[in-house]
Length: 475
Image (cartoon, rainbow, N blue to C red; front, side):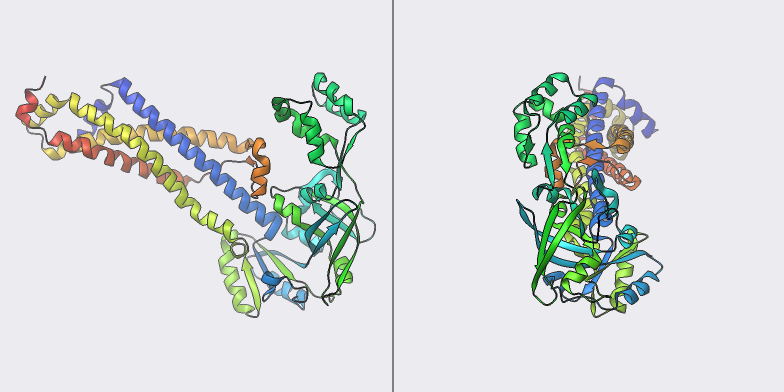
């Protein structure tokens, strides 16, 4: 009976109740959707790091992760890989050579990490071969000889391996893609010009485009005018295993693009045989053995086993290699919970205010109920139930709306293109696919009920302090 009475009381003042419910709905929707976006971004970052950068686990000689000494390599790598591949949880294994050096072109130079790989083996562990920029070379498929390199887009721009040129053919291409003629006529004034880097071209582009036009068309224009200088000469210099400086001319073979500009700027890949010949490494040696598992949840179990099996080697999980990413992942649930608590705490003030108004408006009614025998426990329960109904109705509505919006946006994602450079500088994609687990909705439901109960305490105490005789005399 108390529950039915409380539900009817909620709708006695329909307008006020709807305002409170709407406020709770909007607050819960905003909180849950924001958590979905943040959770999606973190999950994408972890997936990208594992798929393109570090895999699940790495094995190397003791101390190599600290000093990157060329002479600190693993021997008998084939036997080590065969032994690891036999573990049930392991999906694939590959190995890499690793040296730190300089990449030099006619105009620019940059410090890089040069990675020697077996392209076929890498495809089983990493997804980097699928990140090839369309129209910018290939993944070790067509270069003559073995001295080809696969480099990041940011490094290719830094070394001027990607150039920028506006000509009549590109203007026609942009016209066919739907660019307005009034914009194309402006670009015609510098048709035939070549720009040394993207920064110079953007400066020229901004001289003829408004901010709105750049936001809408800028990306497609830059993609159209950029051209990859395939087989461009890149000179790599580095120290070999005998601490002697060496190097050679390599050819730009392909360009990859991932949502991590720092990685793109630093890591270049070449065939393992080419790096071995230049640096003098033994045939069956590598600096790192990279492991991909079937399930990321098996990382701790497998790393513990490998540390026991190979005590003389350094076994690092993805959490050890990128502890900042692991910390973000582990703290995410606590951060999400705190975020929702803050939102609900703010909403609680509105619920408290509403319930106080309810108590004041129904002073005489509450006094009459008390006078005819309703005990204080039932009065408290009635007011608490009303408060819970208010918060839970709005909360459920907010969660349903947020679930629908998250499902819709998770299909195509949300593009924060205007902040792309900032996102990629931190290693995150600017195109985010929101995602959230069902367990989070259960947590939020519990928090909403607790909020309703806590919000009812003060108004209920005020109601219990009413003297029935005085309340009955209230007009």
